[in-house]
Amino acid sequence: MSLHLAVALDGAGWHPAAWRDPSARPGELFSPEYWLDLVRIAERGKLDFVTIEDSLGLQSGRYDGLDGRADHVKGRLDALLIAARVAPVTTHIGLVPTVTVTHTEPFHVSTQLATLDYLSTGRAGWRAQVSGRAGEAAHFGHRTFPAFDPATLAEPAVQAFIAELFAEAADHIEVVRRLWDSWEDDAEIRDVATGRFVDRDKLHYIDFTGERFSVKGPSITPRPPQGQPVVTALTHTPLGYRLGVDLLYVTPASAQDAAALVAAARPARVFADVVVFLDPDRKARLDELDGASYTSDAHIYVGDAAGLAELLLSWHDAGVDGFRLRPGVLPADLTAVVEDLVPLLRARGAFRTDYTATTLRGHLGLPAALNRYARTEVTA
Image (cartoon, rainbow, N blue to C red; front, side, top):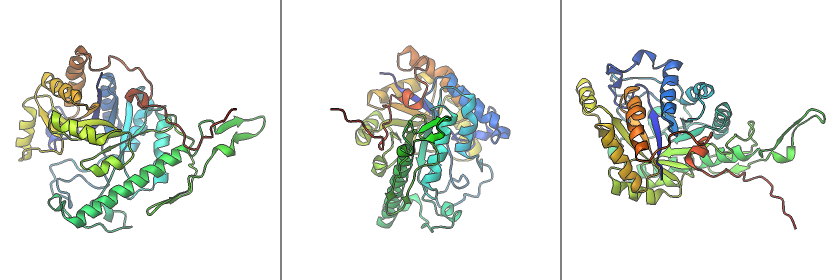
């Protein structure tokens, strides 16, 4: 069975010194042309989708605040708006912006992502992200979050706080999904002769009432072309398995580790995240510039495309559905994925030679999204 491939786009690349690589384009990070070029490269390789990173605070090497470094990229464009800009000038590749669930309203998120699905004619997805940083909460002023660092993660109070964040995220995702279904597929009549634009009986209140949200509905945006855009999330904890998403990104360190994560995460699709440097010397050069050895939550691969192909195939054999590759440097490592890695996978019969679907759900082989509120006709 063929594997799936996605790339995670983040500024100049995932290495904090990526912008200093001779191949980087730091002067263009906030230009639409830069992002268009990256997505077009990925689409040329027939990749399933791109994710676009985002956050509610400036980039930092510290969890508990700014790191004070002026030699790293600071600031970013809004991921969802980048996807909206790219959508009309691409044709097949899925567009999956990061939109944080903490501090945001599910009603707004649902309409924004539904609109992206219309703009892309059915290629939208969502990387739902939780924010537990005190500094990001301070930007909104509605709640005060405790300051903690990864060293305190095992403390009961911190675990309880994280569990609450994920419970809120699950409710947020559920509200968004219900709002997408609040219009039936054929609710729009648009009959000029009778003066009826909508069938009022096919618009539904969602009446969601929980501890964190109370949302009446219906949405102001008709049901998206995919019915349900693809919902994804990165998780390092079993709490993420209960978010109700279509696809989970996990961070295994080996094929055995991958198999265990796949077993735990089903029935969601499972993609393994891998940071890639497809130049054996690139990471070492950037580490020297940065004054520190780059580390990541995900496995870091340094080497040629042939070695990466073997790694991906072994993890695919362990049950992983696909991979979200994080290019160490953009656009260089993305270009190497498309021009060097993809042909090797195709030669092994492990990756598509062309798109066979026009929607992101179609690329991933996800079934049609049934509307929970649609009435089913009963015949005798």
